[in-house]
Image (tube, rainbow, N blue to C red; front, side, top):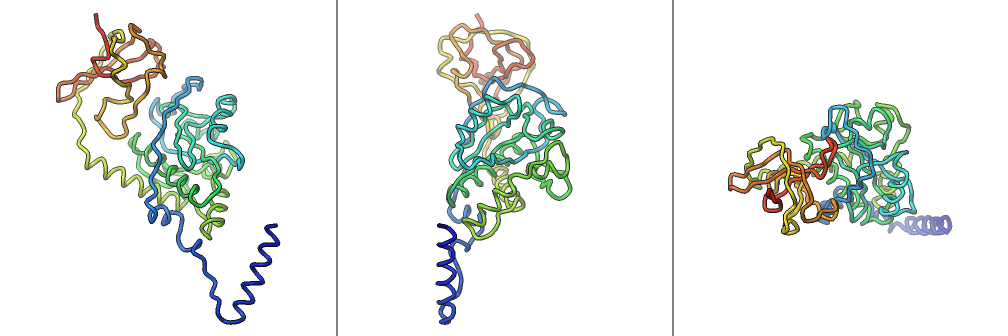
Length: 322
């Protein structure tokens, strides 16, 4: 059917051109993916934290919470959904897993980015946060997915104090494709997302979309994030290491869990109490106190005394020290 349709179009175009009234152009080809995103004010989805506790927790080569960049993947499965991919990865994590998944409307973080993932082989796994893009099937969906992917990449760089640097040219940088890992680091032979980007660009925008173009969008998004930080005033917090214990108070549900003291920096994430099986009277272990200049006190807690236990910040009124 596609071949027949293409043939008809070619004959029609040739006939009109012969009459001197046809000049080939198409609005589909009028703008690049990045321009389409900008011109249509396409924003990014919020990051959904859906951390699964079954993934192993191994430190990066420079230590826990110290990734050196981001590796961009795509699933190479045209028939899957983001939830199918996540379910499959949880069942098969011993073979491979990444930190997050992105599609046209969602950014879902499933593995703690403070620990390495198994998505690109050695040595990349020990260095980089990694995420997968799920294949989408329309012009708008691809543009939204690219906007989400660029934001997530920029967000991770910003979160860990890294600056954008395209590794595609010399194998040194903070923004990597899976193909770049294969070329410069080894441990894998995949080339994604090159073919997916090229195909979607040609299909919906009239020209291949490249990783270099994606990097430019990451860079712009990162600069916008930096600009937003400068405009926002954060609370000043003084920290003190401690070794203490407390219990969850009877009003703990009135507050939230955070990955940092609330409003102490950009991109502070919240967690639900249900994700940690909380209950009144449950023991927590405290290793740090944060006191805001406004006078409020925050505690960094874990729900076990294991050195690998997930750490959360919580407002003092959620705890009982009696």
